Length: 365
Ligand code: EPU
Image (cartoon, rainbow, N blue to C red; front, side, top):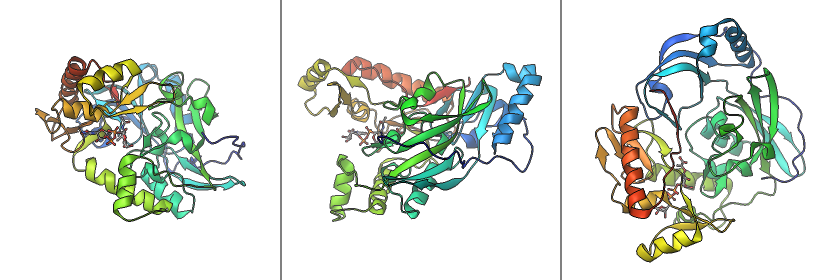
């Protein structure tokens, strides 16, 4: 976490007003709104293009008991979502886009981005602005608003290391609230938005703190190897971003071509004793020491070693280059993906005694 961040001017990248009034759509098709490409419909669906839309929605819910009784599902790019069937609820689609420079001090340059902005577009824009810090997180699918929910991370950097604050809309009070980095209680693929703010807060925008004393973070094995192979010794931020993009394009399927939601499971954390026991049977086990003395295991390695890489169950499959990624080969239902996931979980529990936890959020069905 960036230390001693100052308070910032309350300017906003999230638009105040929208061109058209809020529209509630019944039975909306969600297929293009989830990167697994699963066919499902929403009982009710609204697009939020500005703060005004949230205020209108809150007023509408106060008058419409049927709509108010529906569970709400907030979505951005739908890149960390598994739809198990139709959503018998109200889908709130955060579409508001915008990015802006939010000033600087002696240590940081601050950038703001509205929830519906594409995450990778923000990374590219930050580099064009001469504000490095987000480059290791290049090409992560999804929107800006989804990034803090699971504290996105890749190639040695997590969002929490470059985040100043998150502005949220509080459904309970109808107020706009700013949560500082520390308030977000970030952990590995975890934050306060999965817990106390889960039903309550909608992410409106992020403020990022890009360090002026920037240093390339190239410790992650794959990234170091990619840069070494390109003969780059002291990379600039653009070169780091390019290397990250090259690795991702090689290993991870493009959701536009093959439906997926990135890593399907979290990397499980085990005790030192469990890791030692596993290593005696599997000497090439991939594990990383954590600050609390426990070990994170590479779930992709476990699934690969258990023989699942490239396997299919119906139209659901395990990606051929990254066993941690489940894919939709075409027309898979959410239930088919979930059945494959359950079979993998049972097998990994049996072979390694390790419980795999799903990373994407599930809804519907
Ligand atoms: N591995 C295998 N076989 C596989 C996949 C991986 O043996 O099929 C081994 C690799 O050789 C490597 C280790 O497992 O030694 C780790 O693999 P990788 O570097 O690909 O990373 P990961 O732990 O599988 C995590 C994140 C990714 C992120 C990468 C890079 C999680 C759940 N996933 O994957 O995040 O891009 O590290 O930092 O933490 C995501 O969350 O959606 C995501 C893609």
